Amino acid sequence: MPDSMSEQLRQDMVCEGLLECFHGLKELDKECFRALVTAEEPLTVDELAESVDRERSTAYRAVQRLLQAGFIQKEQVNYDQGGYYHVYKPTDPSKIADDMQRMLNDWYAKMGQLIQEFEDKYDQEAATAQSIEG
Image (cartoon, rainbow, N blue to C red; front, side):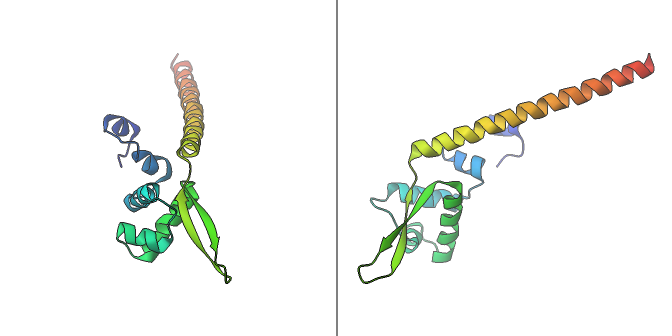
């Protein structure tokens, strides 16, 4: 990931890069998300681990990051005899896009505020320096 915004703007980026950019997700997280999107039905962690050829614990950590970011949903499936297990499916892409747009709007507002603070601070310092010199 590039270090500065100007570097980010110069590089080619694909839509999946938003997963990393907005939420700091890793390559494995993106692989797991793609696997869940392309699956015909929700998957267990074991099925997902097999799909991405990783250990169960590694896939579970990716699932937790995806859940925390809101990119997937967890559902409980109950056994007839009692007990249950969890399956995971992707969140509706329009909801994810709406959440990213909201986050981008919040970021934009915060950056606008910081830019104004920068301008105010250095305008004041320049004015103070000029009055001392003059």
